[in-house]
Amino acid sequence: MEEFVACFGGVDDPRASNARHDLVEVMFVALVATLCGAEDCTDMALFARSKLGFLRQIVKLEAGPPSHDTFSRVFRLLAPEPFEAAFARFTAAFAGRLAGVVAIDGKAVRGAYERGRKASPLHLVNVWAAEARLVIGQRLAPGRNEVLGAQQALALLNLEGCIVTADALHCRVDTAQAILATGADYALALKANQPSLLAQAERLMQGAPDQAVAQSGPAIAHDRLEHRSAQVVPAQGIDFPGLAAIGRVVSQRSLAGQCEPDTVRWFLLSTPLSAEQLLDVARTHWSIENQVHWVLDVDLREDAARSRKDNAPQNLALIRKLALNLLRTHKDKASIKGKIKKAGWDDDFLLSLLTHMR
Image (cartoon, rainbow, N blue to C red):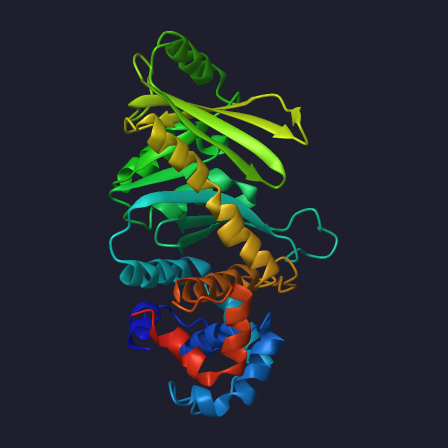
């Protein structure tokens, strides 16, 4: 609890000065409730009443268990930016020095839409440290502008020694500069949205046919046989911040014995990775989809979340990521779904979840 208070205690309380419940205690109870399967403020209030004895072993709750209205008011009014900055500090303190791939990707919270605007759900940018298995950042994509959201998320992080990966939307000068400013290198996907850069990359690769090729596979996934190969060539004559090399990954797939057209992916690299390293980096990037976004939607029910007023959707999404980090990094071998059930059923296991992130 001391670490939690140290990181989140500086977040300003948006409520009136006579608020009965301590802000950090409300945040903490919301986190504990989410670890046990709570999906909204109603669930959090029910959990607080049901587990009051357990909670008072850790926090005072002198005014009793927070109500639905208290949870709702706090998360609607709480400014997301300082809350997300505190989250980044808390995660950094636990993770220590990061290494390896840090993936950036956007995600819609599909249940968080205003009536009559169902086509415009809340859109967040998430930052995932794959080797540490931690979500280390979140930022709103303002006006669904994922590029700006990613740059704002990066500004909160120290990523020295990491390789930041992102899809072709982020293959831009300003995003490359934002990544380099964190101390990291980048591996940015390059597609036809940057036609001049893509043409230059293709010419460089064609001019180096003897460059070493790394092979991966064949591997079977989803009843599909896939073989991948990669090449990396030095980048010469391309004006792009920090650019050191061009990478190409070719995927050959077959389904039920029928070959599909080859998929060619291009990358801008700020460090001269080997072809083998590029294969690993390109594959690791997608762990943000199956280890973060899929788990948030299926196990933590994020897409079904109907909190949609003011700042509540963004703040509650951050609580879910805090819970996911605790669940993911706990040494118990159960699945995320299994750990959520165990946390609700077994107070000793729940306490071990809360104390292992030190």
